[in-house]
Image (cartoon, rainbow over all chains, first blue to last red; front, side):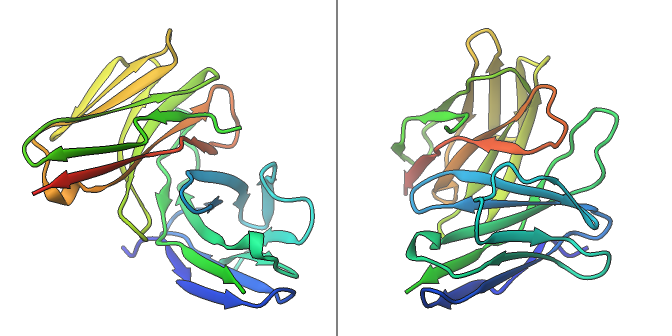
Length: 117
Length: 113
């Protein structure tokens, strides 16, 4: 059972370009989470999605950032018109549907390191 | 602001010694988890402790939780050079419907061979 897959692992963009980050959850997992890690900091929650639904986007910047998790295919985190401050590591995590206990362990991918020049 | 704050920010010990890291949080929680992150890599889940538990063990790891003080500690016994990594605590807020995790700032552990 492959783990959470993310690609690309490294992405370089110039200011104003678009960045697309992909995440394939573990087999059987229907919940996806995106986190951002700035240099020397902990991870910060961005968005939580289930198939075709955004459940919680309270951590997403109001502009330029969007996320989707279509019925088929990977989850996509899209950053339009990137700026230098978007440079960070972006991690995706997946979990199975929440159990009766109300929580499930999240399994993290290796991350995509975005560098904006 | 970050839910969790960890101390120390950095810790350097010799192989074979024990390492203790602490985490404090602000709100009521469902559970608290510890993760390890090797330099430039993803996160590895280490252990989860529920809000009604006080102590949990997993191999060389021992986690305690004090909900009255809103704090947790991670003890790594008989440390090895391979334990060198950053360690993060993460909490799931009580009553939260989304299972999102709030991470601490992390402790950078260096184990000298």
